[in-house]
Length: 278
Length: 299
Image (tube, rainbow over the protein chains, first blue to last red):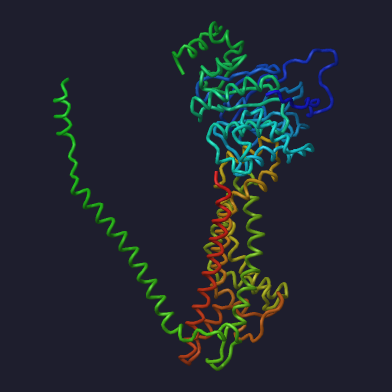
């Protein structure tokens, strides 16, 4: 699998760099003091973390600790929840994604997302991949793009003879890889995955994990997972979220995955990793 | 603790009374069957009371002739055309306004006090007696807008009458489209309209179609508001424009049953059969279309 995506253009969000030239670019994505409220419910409190390029970052933690909420604020999916309010800075290429001048439609094209349950469109496999590219004005050869994305998602060999069949005719694991291929087709450089393997069997799960390791060479990946072994297997960095005593989601610590899993700084992380709670 | 002791205690605690439960189940089953049977028998009697006098009067000229004083020559051609004009007109109006309203309320409007107020009122409108719509149509369309007793005035009135049904059923259909489909679309950088037009509406289409057909079936059988708005008791020509005066099938039937001659009453029964057949054809087309579209969009 040696297919290369074309080099990504400069950050679209704005042409004006907010960092003085010469200063080294910080992390690709940087969250600074992010708070999320749903109505009166304070779901996530004061999360600050960096995500570097071409790495896999895993968000782990007990249910309801806000890790999916943080993930969804990175591609502005929380905009779709009427009561949601995101405060703080979320920088992407040093651009604040929540700035008034930023169009969430463009953010989501650049920061793709794969959901917990495979959700292909009730359309053909080809259309599933092509649609996102088409609506974003892709000008190249569509068949080539579809093939390239399906190859990147390690699905091409299984579907190359039935591209006209419905995406829903595939198995759950294949559907999830189709969703990954679909996310790749809009030319993103970040892919967010929200528990992508929790609805899949162990073999499909392993395939997805292998795939993520391949994709890391081209893309930056953030994955939310309930499965700690999965986090330990695939990720370079791990962020552990938990609830504080006001039942707000907080980031407990983030670091290299091997460190988090062997020698965490915070006793809460150690408690969770060793299965004493959560 | 031994297994003996456990099973001994269980025997003392449970009283299965399986026979009594079975009998109670059978009684309910019998009641439900009775309800179904009664409905079928009543429907059968209704059909029989129409088919018996009506069938001998069914003939080609009933469909092709214009109304006449002589029962043997009388036909309902103008009424059939009038109904088709009216139903397509009111269907078109209700489809455009109703679907637009449903899309706005479901996809665009915020969920606040106002939209909930509007929603409640649309539901209430569905329960307003049809004669009220007739009076509204008479005042607004016939008089104020000087449309006269035309197809246009009738179609607008009837369109308003079925509008709540179309709005409510379209809204339900749109709401039934899973959130995951919308999220998938937004996550690819689609705008709201791209999401709605490419995914939500195709997935909701079978349900929207069902609501349209139900409402058009209502429109084709509705009489009261048209007595007020349409009112023509005798039309001897086919309508040829939205401004023609018109006659519709239920009005024709109403008119014939009011004549003193018994022949006209039998002719009315035959006309009812024609109306039912047209209704059945409309419904079959709808069912076919729905099957056709829902096969494509299953998630």
